[in-house]
Image (cartoon, rainbow, N blue to C red; front, side, top):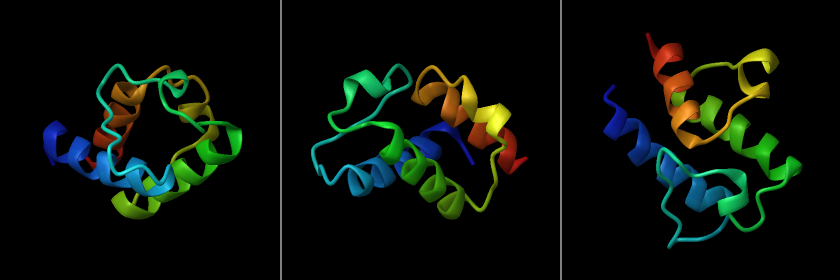
Length: 80
């Protein structure tokens, strides 16, 4: 799956989790850029990403993610 395809799916997931059809995430998007992205929605977001992509993250892997680009890279690694 290409990075563009990953971001297409991520944007659908983010719009659903944050209930914002106008939301578009990029590689540099951080939690501070998205209204309502707190610890609870972070857990919901990660669980939804795992379900949608059919992968599982370790806590160690997601603990230090700095932005959505790093999440996309982690997804790409999980899909290999």
